[in-house]
Picture 1: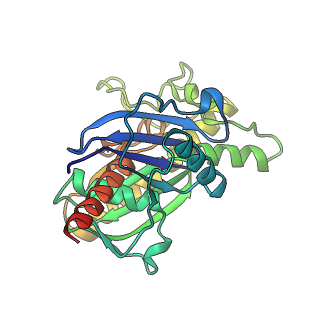
Picture 2: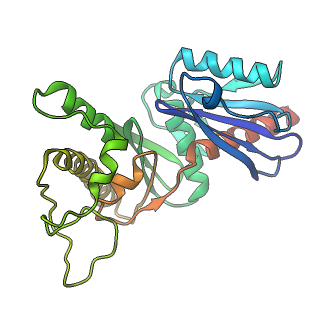
Length: 283
């Protein structure tokens, strides 16, 4: 890679993450901002150098796309920008979806980022956002398929909204409820446990903790089931790669080894942009 940096934008359902990546692949600036607001919620790009182009993954809809376009035009009028779409093959990854273009752009970029971050390894990629997504990626870069489930916060909110006597919890309210309780004798925690303090089942003694822990354990159970099934089907060790806004809460409940990586989408966008730049030079 050479030349001006790329601006990379990952517009998810909950927030927008961005990074400025130099020509050699080094990230020099990064940040995140919320949907829908201005002022303090707007990114401060005033001190950034002008990028060569912006590369975007957007799964948050047209209103967010228009807001991002307006932000780009305000800071860098006329800046070229590309919103990626999943395709049949790119950056060493092959798309196993029946209709490749229907795979979410964030999942596609994340697959590309993961394949590059862990070359030659079979992977199960779990992302814990508004939705929880799973991707099975062979060592040769073949994406064989995935799963989509409600995310941790969405599970809790759905229970509160559709049951008469349960509270509606969001992630901020529920995070502190996953700590050990003196009355339970067991913890939903990633802290090491001694032989005299075995890690046992978590049965909460109030409704809020019941909701928070129950939904976290439901997430963990899904991941563990698919990780075990995938290793049995492939007959080789599979690296579980986790990330996303609720990763701390869900991984605290996991009982299988895992690797944390929170920038797979931005990493994949950087590789897509670099491949396009190289193709343009040799085209």
